[in-house]
Length: 559
Image (cartoon, rainbow, N blue to C red):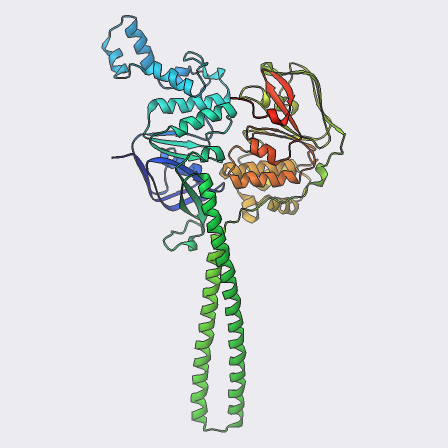
């Protein structure tokens, strides 16, 4: 049987009753599939269900072949040796024992047919740019991005039939991303990759768009708990560029359908109004004939009953036509994608041009990185902090934020600042979105908080969701709202890899939110298109433990 994934009537609901997927039917066959969709659609949940990390609340998942799963947040025991993280420690030890002359039978049983496991492991590490690590070092000696590649290497060595990747380029620098792109392009089996990385999605064979639609939107759907949502996958052949072209055609047709449905709806409203006027005239005429008693009572009674029946049928006919037109309009509107944008005013974040916002002086950081001499950030500058994984970018931001003490030197912020780390741990998972924002603005009224949260797309009951139930993109949006709505307003905002876990619509939402931000901005990121979209004015490269200012042309540092 060829490797495949089949989900039948698949449903999953969180313990608090929040539905994520309801009645989903989908299959994945050979080739590379890019699984996309807005944040909260259930992409990561679907991968976890396929990998067996979560148990469905309904339906079934059947997988033909062995599954390898790379989660969105990779955590490895820092005390493990690299060969243990790769899952080859026992076979490697048995090989070394045999080479040393120990011919015990258990060693041969451990090795099996995998006599070249060490060579394969070293070759795989080399292909992923990890050849310098070696098999005897510990995981604690590698950077966060290298640990992602190490976990991928372990999967590749297992040679699974089905490979599931959830946002694999998160935390990877440009070098590591290129290595991962090569591994994806060379993958021979079934692959499902969830990603917001356009360059990665250009390598897939087809796009599966996981959408959340209302139960009424398709006749075969099953309504979720509490009027929940229904998962539906729409397929597009080709890579992401082909998907965008097909979607543009689809959206143009959908918008035409909306215009036609609106015209029909207006027509049916006019016809119903006209019919009601005519029926009122008939009623007045009949009443006048009754009052004047021009015909026998029995005849007039029969005519009155017939007129009432005719009027009732006429009214029902037009009301049904109007209801049908309204339903067609609703369906047409549903077909048009509407990726809401964050629209918020942040006037209190403004910094006058030339005002000193941040001063770094002969700063030596923990783990060895440093800033030689002095560095000043003035006015509403927008600074990009780039460099390889492990270069010290996060350490620098944490030191400026006061989370880490410098070894020597000074890091002084002259204005209120806020720092949004990669982990998004500024949120308390046990609190709702509104309660989390209230922690940062304790003097703001509940009404004011909710009104401002609505601008961040947390409207109504969405503001009452617990932080623990939010998707990666929703969690980021909530954390961003908490920081930007904080009191006092931050005039220096620092973001560490902000586009991790964001779908493309959410990345656009972040860009529009930052357009309203009038303070100084420092962003550490490997996402060059995003950095260019937010109007970066200065580029800083952390390289070989030193902070250097570079030109825009030098940003795409060589592989």
